Amino acid sequence: MIQKANFDFIEVITSVGPQVVNELEKIYGICLDLGVNNWRIMPIILYGRAALNKDNLSLSTKELKYVLDYIKEKRKTGKINVTLNEMWFCGPEYEFEVRNSGFFCQAGINILSILADGNVCGCPMLPYMSEGNIEKDDIMEMWERGFLKYRNIEWKKVGKCKNCESFDYCCGGEMHLWKPPYQEIEVCYNSLIKNQ
Ligand code: SF4
Ligand code: SF4
Image (tube, rainbow, N blue to C red; front, side, top):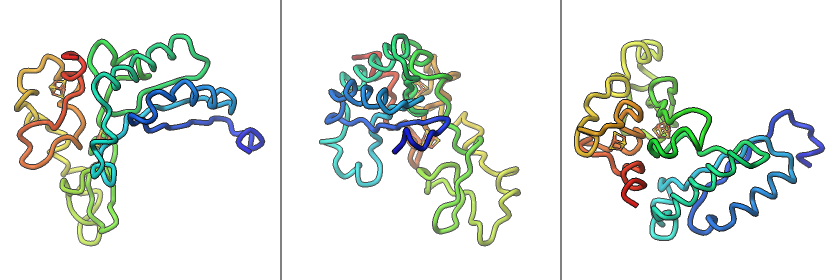
């Protein structure tokens, strides 16, 4: 069906938990057969219902490293453009080897999200960082004068990010890994991988 549709560009996104780690080569083969142009690999994000099942769905650091090595290798030798998704700052060993450009959390920089209740924030994963509500606030005003917490990120220089040599590259990581009272990033994949 996909081949008959004759699309100019086909992208497949695979969310990878422990159950899928050993299936990557099989999925790669399916993508090849389907004529996929880009295969985006996304280690599972423990949000929503996935957060209720962390024990079964979390990748161990070893598995995460395996996924990164797999992507790195496939980008050198494979026939499909394979990329890590836009999250997970994974440090100098991997960062420019596993995707086309370096990690960049775009929330509130070039992404604005309007949630179901009308609240406006920088990304659907950040309902607690609302800048106003579409029902009563002017959206251009919000975009042009607000979003300061998203754009002035000096506040992220706390905890393990405080003296980190990678801060200028990762800007304190994914915004969704910072929760009120914003004193520490929940997890730093760069540190996990380095210490593996
Ligand atoms: S907050 Fe997370 S999901 Fe949203 S843009 Fe940043 S990295 Fe991506
Ligand atoms: S400690 Fe913070 S600044 Fe350093 S790599 Fe991790 S998330 Fe980025």
